[in-house]
Length: 144
Image (cartoon, rainbow, N blue to C red; front, side):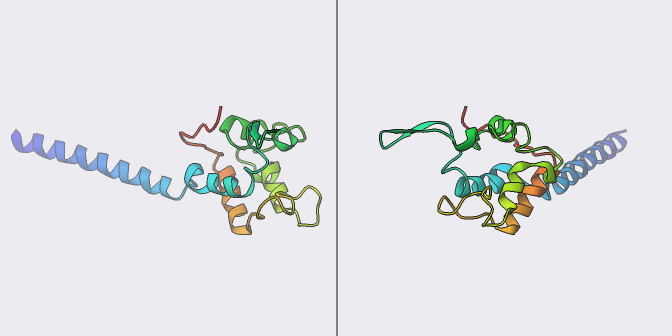
C-alpha cells in the first residue's frame, strides 16, 4: 500500500513539474512587454508621448493626445487614430507599428527627426510579435 501511494504521489508530482516546465517553455518564446517593448517606447517615444507634466516652468501635453506611458493609454490611442494605436492580434492594423515603419521622409513617421532615435527594424518586428501575441502588458499598468 505504501509503495502504491508513493508511486502515485511521485507520478502526480512529476506530472505537475512537467506541466509547469511546458508552460514556462511556451511562455519563454513570448515577448515580455515590460522587459522588451517598454524600453523601446521609453527610448524613442516618451519624449513626446507621456502624461501632461511641467518641464522648466512650461506645461507639456502629449503630442497628438497620444500617451504611451500606461497600458490603458496605449490601447486608447491619440486624437488622430483612436482605438487603432494597438489592435491586439493585428500588427498591420496598429498605428503604433505603421508610424514607426514609415520612411524618414514621411511627415507621419515616428519619432520625427530630432525628437528621438528611429526604431530599428528588429525592434519594430519585436513590437509586431508582441501585438500578434495579443498585446499583453502583463502586470504593467504604467502611469495613471
